[in-house]
Image 1 (cartoon, helix red, strand yellow):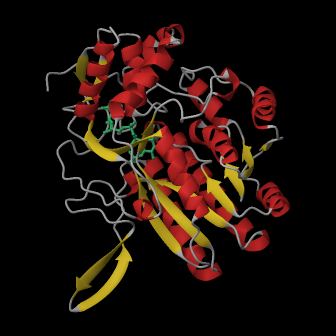
Image 2: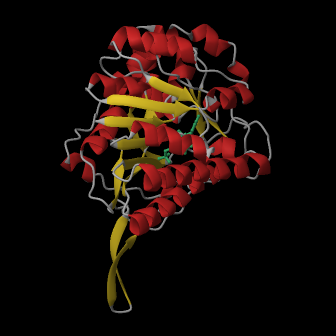
Image 3: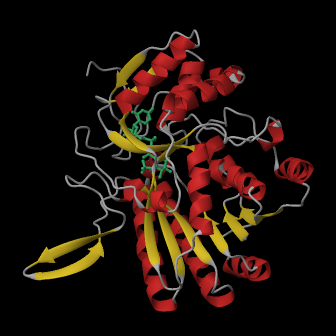
Length: 395
Ligand code: USQ
């Protein structure tokens, strides 16, 4: 199939371009390289070194024997989006090209507004381009499990049956997102569902959990093909941060009591699930929702697992509780469904510790890079828009 990846330079996008190519698909994609700028703006860098556009393209050609049509461009520029998608005529468009960080979006007025304008515009431009020049293309839109929030009932996949005042309907499940970033994804879900309804676009809205890990099986060791791995408070996700902290024996930064529960999946499962979504498109006009994760854990359990894996590797890993800089429920019910992907062949990984071990080993090679950024490991972006470094607390 011909797959267009929006956001092809990112953590998921660069890995996915290689993974889908290795599975026989033809890939093209676009990126404005903004993730590199955002991470520099928050005074950090990828723990695993990443190479520039030209070096990545050369390595891709050497390894896969084919040119990758990866253009640097702006998805907020509609003419560019329409012309590239019209030229490539994809069967599927995987849309990963958004600002993905909750803390970054909570920093101040400028960052929250920018996040929403950028994220909603990129999605709207892709929806319009599908309608205008590639109506057969299937949009695989990366949303987030965080769109649902933490309701005190089970979380279905997008829709639920409801009976109200004697009448029944199948309605979208309520979205109660916990950051301006997560809210931007809620708006995208609504816009995509509406576009499907009025224009007959086929779309899969992926409610993805928190991704972790540094590689997919078969990724090889050419450093030019490595994907980025962030560990700062904004762009590093919980397990990736814990593994980076373990690699340099910095205490793990557990926010609050650490009893928040989230759904997680390793990078390789994310690749596999996106492949399954692409290869099993919905009918024209169908808008479907996949909850995409392997398993749920509390953040405290994950810190303890990181500590165990760290000590198996001879590292002294302490766990410390810090004031929670976020406004979020720490004690809550959490039970999301995950059936749609399993029905089309997904076998969830259940071995978080093996993945952590691989990642800590990868990160230990780059411990010196992480050590240069020790001062940014403790969070200071607070959900009320102020900045103050969290203090250590007794839970
Ligand atoms: N947390 C800690 N310590 C840390 C970092 C995080 O205790 O050092 C806690 C947070 O308070 C939160 C949980 O871990 O309760 C998850 O935080 P996270 O930063 O790993 O994940 P989140 O902000 O939710 O965002 C990440 C990605 C985002 C994606 C989302 C999926 O950055 O792009 O949409 O995961 S989900 O969480 O399912 O919404």
